[in-house]
Image 1 (spheres, rainbow, N blue to C red):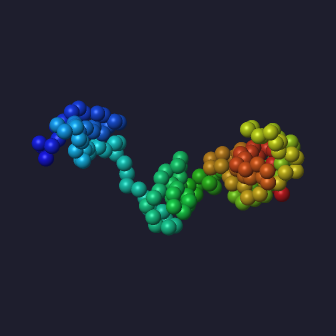
Image 2: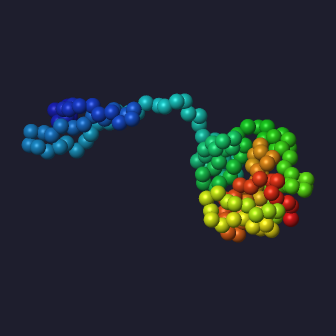
Length: 157
């Protein structure tokens, strides 16, 4: 095998050095190319399995772990229940808001990135509270998806 391959040069791509093959005397190339094993990067922890579907295709997104297969999210830290209890989200009238509530916009709002304004009286259904932020909620209207709204412009429906 050493007679077939001669080391021409080492080419570095990222951190993986490749050894290229040189043409043989009859201007043909050998079939195989030797590749050196790559080094391990920074220490990687073993992936956690999803508590809902028990698959290990998970990743960390901010303070949560997310399962790429089923979409389930769970907190990375064990104190998520106490953090949720500490954050109280209220609308413009002082009513408590919770995940899944329906709210109404109390004044016309310009929406960044859209030519359609959010009119007074627009209903936002199935809101989601932003973790650790008592002033913002996420939701969808009929015309505009993916809205992040300040609670001072909303009232509970």
